[in-house]
Image (cartoon, rainbow, N blue to C red; front, side, top):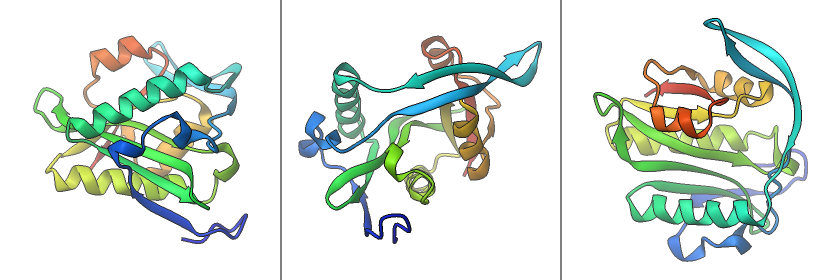
Length: 184
């Protein structure tokens, strides 16, 4: 895939356990300026002003590397997008099934570097997650998704809808996230 903004070739591939460390993210910009978020009030979804800047620090990248290593060692997928050899996007899907009927696989993360957004990388990463989960015979992807209006627009464009069944652990960990699913 060609990157229309910087005219770089984007390469996609599975991440290997031995390459996952904080240095892998040296050129990755997690930063997201958020103005409005979706919130559930009285059973209805509404957009509320909630300005903040979501940015990761060293501790966040340490936690992320631990999570991605765990994903791989437990049979899940960690998949990346690279420009000029630098990680610019990634997605992870956990290897275990979840849900009352074991119908879900958990899309645990999907992020595109701030400098590379809007170029189709997220769409390709989401497609990789779908292929992986379908290959494992999952019926749906489960996504505990950031509630920012822009993030939710991405998931809606991918075909995600509100989850028919909420995962209590995800809700407790991130109460403002939107709980979504994608039917495979």
